[in-house]
Image (cartoon, rainbow, N blue to C red; front, side):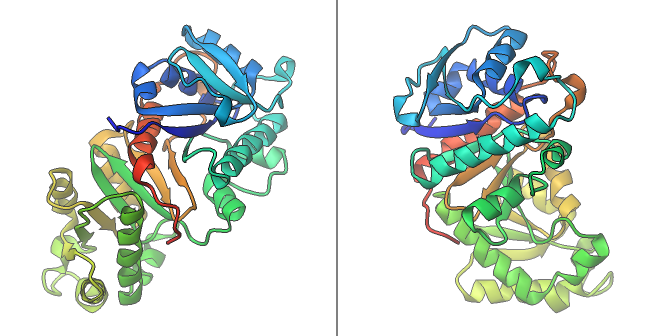
Length: 337
């Protein structure tokens, strides 16, 4: 538990999805209020309905800004944008009003963070199709946050059970990812990852870089990427003062990090790190977007339209998302990467 309870904004997500439900369930957990001061940004009528669906004993305290919050367990402080026609809301369906509302919740939360009224954002799921139906010009959170904060190439980090994973490449084909594994990129990312952990207040920052090929290439027997690009990139970062080792064979590096040998792993491609994190604990794998002028944590699941409004959705990921924001917020520094 952290000693300093910081204010965390929780944009409610797509009203037709599970966002309001998992937020209500999370805020019914007293541990959340022991760790931070949560403020929901959403629609009061939608959230009241969510409270009724999940059958929790919660009251809503409508506020106009975070300074008015009570921050007491059992009372949800909510900034009401009043932007949903509740009579037309249908759970589990793509609706333009919901896409527009979800964007407005995020935009308001970002403004609060930029004005230092909240220390962090813990975001719930939004729906790409709903955003499109509302003519919102973004496909997801990351693109919104990049534009709203004028941030270039934010850095994604996963955390699960204390294991931190960064990604050298993400949403590209495996063939393209390998072509991007250059000495310069490896060095650059290790420097940026180190800075990201500094901003989170992490004092010990020993990195391991995962290998690409079986046994990290076995000295060129199974490929030369480790010899020609990855290894020299690590050496260049070390020369700049970064505490990094590798490449460490990918079949063992994540297990070693989970058991405390390393403070973070630089995964070389999307699935290498995603599989490691989600097999460790799918529901507790939380994403942190580094490089923004504020702290942002996020669940790594979608709006789950198929079960929305049915009190089925688990709040484990959302609770973990808020707790991680609360853990890092007191030491987080705003300086840019």
